Length: 70
Image (tube, rainbow, N blue to C red):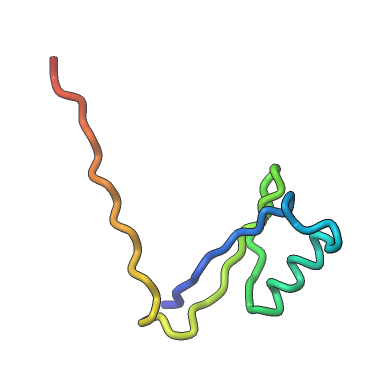
């Protein structure tokens, strides 16, 4: 099963000398695939890990907290 790494680019903070498309094109040259862009101009990207054994393990979920019965 393929494993992925993820990244995001805040397109609002792209330098004035570059365009949004230039930033996304540069990411594509590094193997990133655009997944989507949110309404507030954040681009989410993914790329397949070449060597999944070097990937950091997923973060453990915090246990759910329950309110004490009163």
